[in-house]
Length: 102
Image (cartoon, rainbow, N blue to C red; front, side, top):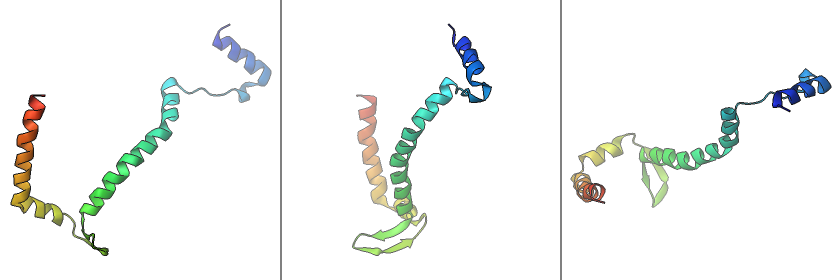
């Protein structure tokens, strides 16, 4: 017996209002995976967003009560720092050969 024949028999016995609307395979797979996708997004997204939020503030670990918003000032300080550019150059010199010659 085909699926459509069974559905028609159910409609005759139960009535058309009681039959379930079927989801497509893609929609069904999405709704099965939606809870875990939400959890993974929160587990990965929250720390990234919170780290960016912290980077926009002047924060002292010795005095956690002092939490001053400085905006992109921290990034401007880093861009003006010669230590940052030296560290970036050394990192690139180490990483480039490691990527090119695995």
